[in-house]
Length: 89
Image (cartoon, rainbow, N blue to C red; front, side):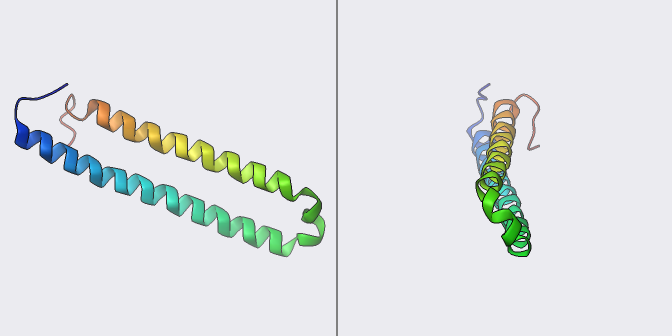
């Protein structure tokens, strides 16, 4: 829904860009932590897990994909309803 007040629109879009940065930061933090955990698990159990390394990669890849889809849907919902709910007022 568009508003007639351009100052409010600029304010909302600038705050949406800030929220987008937070969402990207959250996703980067999640990926970093998962990478660290994967590294620790693989380094401690390499003799056992080297035969199943591809399963670890598939599992972590699916987790990252699901998190990315979730973060993108949150951003889309904020963008869709930011004028309806006066989200940034």
